[in-house]
Length: 127
Image (cartoon, rainbow, N blue to C red):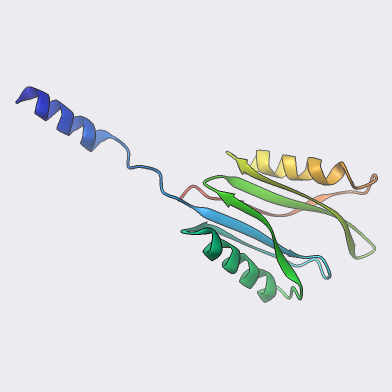
């Protein structure tokens, strides 16, 4: 009886299993508008929401650039004279800080010295 009680207590004290959370970032290269989603229950739902938000901001040619599953992701761009020249993306990071840093690094590797900036990030842990 004690063993059953101990096992029952351990099961009740154990944290609930992690859910599945998706987020996405959409960006319109032609006009620089972006949209993002977080903590959606599926990849298609996350992408659909990010595209909707991008278009809501005025994006005319929004495309999904990043999808993150149970993690953080980011998208950074280099814009010169109103045109997006290069982009960098990241996904699979535990923090927004790390995701942003990796997206900036990716952008800077191809920007020929032009400044890069993070346009959006998403973290998806159900919080």
